[in-house]
Image (cartoon, rainbow, N blue to C red; front, side):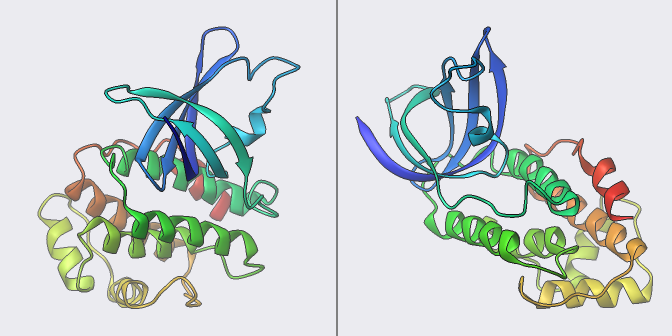
Length: 229
């Protein structure tokens, strides 16, 4: 049966000589895997660029019961990004977020329109934002906890949880910035320096690791730190 749904590409792996298996977070079915044949050929119907991480799609897809991999019938980029793929800071943040979401959403196989809407709208906002976006990934991760069901009440709670598992401490100025981060939304102009940024991200990643069994090492983290340093 065919279904219409919006989707967010999280990643893909090569399959065979010319095909891809694409991981997509969908509005209607949660995380899904789709196979696209011949996409790595010169005359492919759909170009590889469509399946780059975080691309926003309108889809018509097949959904077979008990099938772990399905197919896409129709694919349309909507809306196309204007800046994320082309600006080094934005693209580095985007690669990090795609890898992060691929881990944290791995078990999300049911419809969750509130969380999908938040992720979709946040990425659109990030693409349109012209300045002061260097801390977007921190703000996004802080807000995403609400939709995953483990939003901390503040800096004290998150540090109490993290310190039970990881030997990390924040300076007083970093605690103030963590509280500021947790208390405000994506539109807030968070002012932090490089060291504070790295420390707050480390705390957030540890916090997610505590609440998610599917969380693995983020390979793009080192590159992100280099670009934002």
